[in-house]
Amino acid sequence: MTSAVSTAALDRFFRSILDIEEFRSIDSSMNGLQVDNDGSEISKIVFAVDACLESFERCAAAGGNLLFVHHGLFWGSPLALKGPHRKRLQFLLDHRIALYAVHLPMDQHPCLGNNAALAELLGMEEMEPFGVYHGKKIGLKGKLKKPLGVDDAVRAISYMGRPPLGVYPFGRELNESCAVISGGASSEALQAMDEGVDLYVTGEAGHTIYHQALEGRLNIVAGGHYSTEVWGVRKVMELCAARLSMDTEFIDIPTGL
Image 1 (cartoon, rainbow, N blue to C red):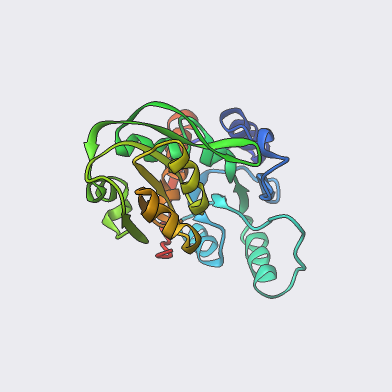
Image 2 (cartoon, rainbow, N blue to C red):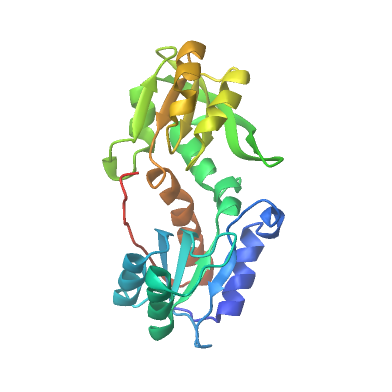
């Protein structure tokens, strides 16, 4: 039998598994419950990477009454309620859908995070925190259980077999060490070079680090911002299904970016 719980109970659960408060001072995302519902209990949680009208519409069509996302609607300064932003909020209110967003705490989480999932897919071991962002290390680095070519790494992390955003085989043919930071972390490739890593895996490529990576002989796989960040969302979904006995569903809305 499917459980039903309040948004307040779900907020407590998510905060018990994800260290939301730790990143309050450095994360521009409003992590946590961004839009509440009318007080009715949640019977189905739908998961997606991005808060957008399409994810809201598909959540409603799937019978979900809470949408959990990595990229929410509120970042830094408040937005005026007009244009697409107003339409998105109006849809959530009209359909009594609550919105929950978790950004950096889900990238960094050592078990449920995007980076932890990527490291697992790549077969990394002896891992330690990597990639300083506003004083906190949000990625991981470690040794590879077996040496991997760049193409092997691409296959390991590709969600649904989709092609990466970019591949830059500037270094050795077989990689023995790797660092990962999901999403938009191209400049952290410089930290990977400084720390003697063979392969750097992230979501986006950056023009400004191209020649430095080339001359520094660092292999880079830019798997795509979206594709490198489906993993944490899905891990949280699996945990909710197991611990809360709730109906869950993942909505795949790839951007190709």
